[in-house]
Image (tube, rainbow, N blue to C red; front, top):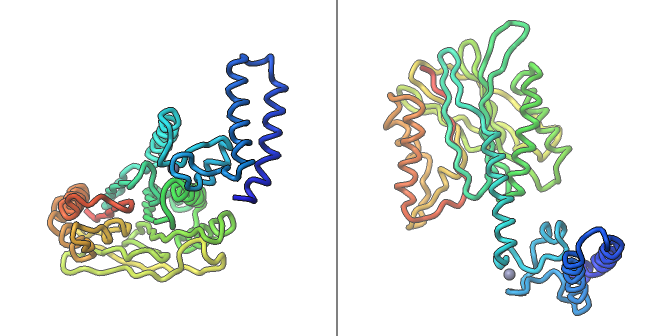
Length: 326
Ligand SMILES: [Zn+2]
């Protein structure tokens, strides 16, 4: 706290000067209110209590102090007006994130269907479904991805949006799948801090099947008419090493077979006894309705997940994406 006090005192004094210089251009009441806020913060610096919540004495969140140096309470102890502002910001962020979610697309024999349920106002899972055009051959294919950015809350969701922007710009460039992932990794490495990374699995439809690249993400399930296969990871998460190499695996699903991508918010969801939902139960729910199409399969999983959790609240974002051959 001592260091913060050294840097914050001159900033507050400068604010005070700027406010005084503005007298005359705003109402006296308003100006005096702001000056009182600055003085209250300065008084706290003097007694070594700057940056501590007035209710619980815990340090106030750093990012909030940076945007508002007069912050008096931690997130848990906001007054009514501050709480309302904070809620408005979160509501806006939720709206923006939902507007960025993809549409469920179908192409030729392929249908896609996804569900995205963030645990808080915004999520750190990445979900993409996109139509790719190959201008040379005049053909189209479906690109799809599910990822999970390390961390939680608003910070994770900002990184997720950054990752999404990287992919959207690369998808227009007619690159191979391995090249898309390698470049996304490089760009993500170069534009984020060393502690920021994301696991991701993505793929696209081809003339005779699907190709998949798994960068450290939980293994997608290939739901065959007979039996089940797993697409294990063969690459590092994005954002760790800028030179990381990625390889692609080919699959040729038959009619009625599906590829299922998901985040660990599903398999690691817990019930009241502390047990995990797990892979096996996910496969069982998918199989229950695999004859009814991707929409019914997604519903089956989410219904079963909610039965399993019962009263245990979700602790992680849930993303499920099904690519089904009709
Ligand atoms: Zn507090």
